[in-house]
Amino acid sequence: MLEFVDTSENMAAIGGLENLKNWLAQRRGAWDDAARNFGLDPARGVIILGVQGCGKSLCARAVAGEWKLPLVKFDTAAVFDKYIGETEKRIQQVFRVAEGLAPCVLWIDELEKVFAGSGPDSASVDAGVSSRILASFLSWMQDRKAPVFVAATCNNVTALPPELIRKGRFDELFFVDLPNQAERQQIFSIQLAKRKRNPAEFDLNQLASAAQGFSGAEIDAAVQSALYAVFANQQSLTTDALMAALAHTVPLSTTRAEEIQSLRIWAKQRAVPASGALAIAERASNLA
Image 1 (cartoon, rainbow, N blue to C red):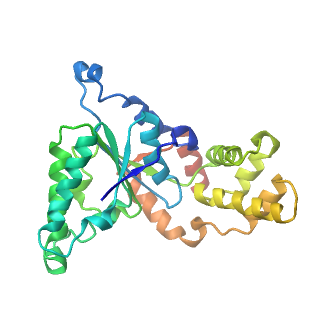
Image 2: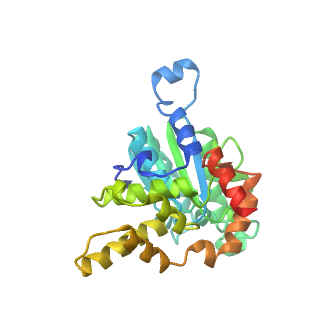
């Protein structure tokens, strides 16, 4: 039900998202004795909401790497059992194990799927199991004393129970949008360096402009596609090869434009932008 995950990444592996990075940096070490003596409580957790492929899961993993804490992933499928009462016992076991590992980061991917059946009709759907799991989780998030930081990601925030996202359970709700021009340049630089290429040898500004509307995952995939192409032709990776790969990609911002815009509208008044002020201003001008 809990899986140990490698924590080799840190926040330097993520392009942009300055607000989220600063928020996390301020809370680093909040579980130490010095912080406790200062009057601080350990950070409880964060929900990272946003467009698919924009680095939400990478952020959750990078928190543990940045803070040098063990990372455990909650396997939501493994917690459910066909026998009455067993699921509730398993969720309590998850809480006990996580607290035994504290201080640690507990990663819950796609939080909305864990509590998908916890609405008012859940009793007729699953005999009320989802509602009882939600009640147990809310109680644990509110009352736990052990320094377990919960890093949860979410694609569909409308599926989350409203009581889950109020203050007191999670410390903050961040919205991760599609990367802007400067963030796309950072992502290209990171991806190229990761593949043993010198970013200075590429026109990052041209690539970032051509990748407008691309998510970080789509940029990663385009770089990989260009590498396959030049390797097959026994050529070197160039800006032109990357531009060709981008030209053959239809980004999610085109195929699911209405869904992304709806998510932005919801998050505008309800979530903190993960990107800095300059990135937000640029997106606003592009949408105008």
